[in-house]
Length: 96
Image (cartoon, rainbow, N blue to C red; front, side, top):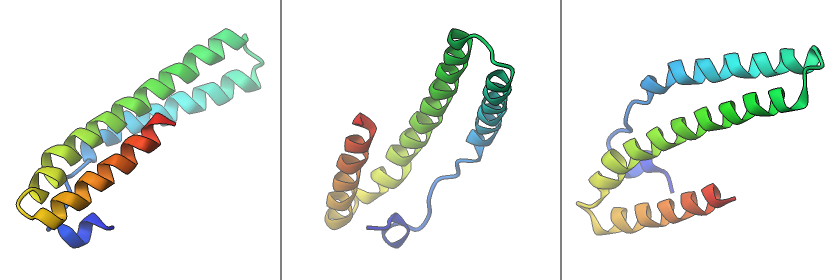
């Protein structure tokens, strides 16, 4: 089930690029910490920060998806049912 077929466009997610660039920098920092044999809790704290930043990106993209793709699908019963199923699958994946 591809949203490109059901909807005319997808929302722009370019606003997430700076945050993702920061995440990449954080990951490089974690790699450096591991190479330097830094103290385990220091590494874990940085990894938690990376996970938090990724979760924020996920949340922002999900919000845009709900406000744009899902909201548009409510004009068509079949598209609405497909989007609801899509959201169920996404939420199942997020729980893991």
